[in-house]
Amino acid sequence: MPTNLVNLEKIADVRSGFTLREAIKPSSGGDVRILQIKDLTQGLQIEPNALPAVVWEQNSTTPLLESGEIVVAARGNRNIAVVYSAKVPVVATNQFLIINIKTKTVLPEYLCWIINQPKIQQMFHRSGTNIQLLTKSALLKVQLPIPPIETQRSIIGLQQAWEQEDQLINQLQTSRQKLQRGILQNLFRN
View 1 (cartoon, rainbow, N blue to C red):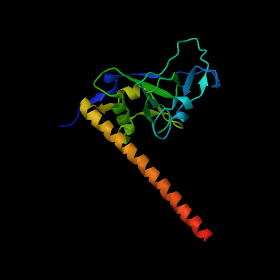
View 2 (tube, helix red, strand yellow):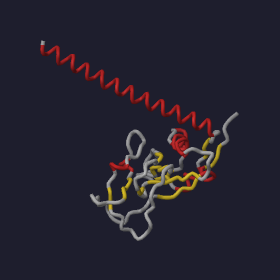
View 3 (tube, one colour):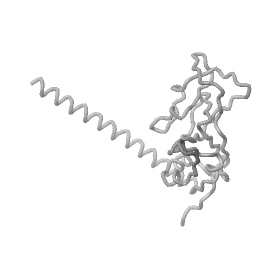
View 4 (tube, rainbow, N blue to C red):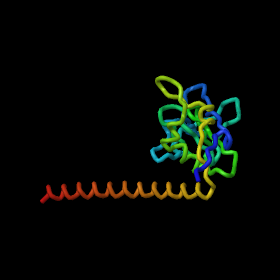
C-alpha cells in the first residue's frame, strides 16, 4: 500500500533565517555563532564550533536554532537540508529556511532525509534567473511521503549505516593510496 503524501505545511512550521543588517564581524568574545550556506559540510552536518562567533547587538531577541530544527539552504539549485542538534547558540542567516516540526509523528532526521532526496528536490518550485531561490510558500506546499514512525526509524538506521560504509570505503581508499606511494618510494630506494 502506498504511503500517503502530506503537504509540509500540515506537519511543520517554516520561518526564514535572520537578516543581518551589516557584514559579519567575528569576535573572540562572541556569544552567538552565525550559520551561512558556505558553512554546511559535505557530510550534511552543522559544526557550531567552526562557525564565526559574533556579539549579538540586534534590537530583537536572538532567533536561535533549536535542537531538532531543520535548516534548508534557500539559495541555489540544491536546497540541502540539515538537522541542527547541538546546544551551541546559533543563528541561521536569511540564506536558510528553518523547519520546526509540529507533530510527534515525524522524526527530524527522516524529514531531513526525505527533503534531500533528488525526487523531492525536483519538486521545489524555485524562482530567480541567476541564483535560484526556494521560497517559504513553495517549501510549505511540497508533498512528502510520511510513513509510520517505525518505518522512519528504519530508514534513518539504513542511512546511518550507509554513511558509515562510505566513511570506511574512504578510509580504505586512503590507506591503499598511502600503501601504493610507500611501495613506489621503496622501489626508488632499492
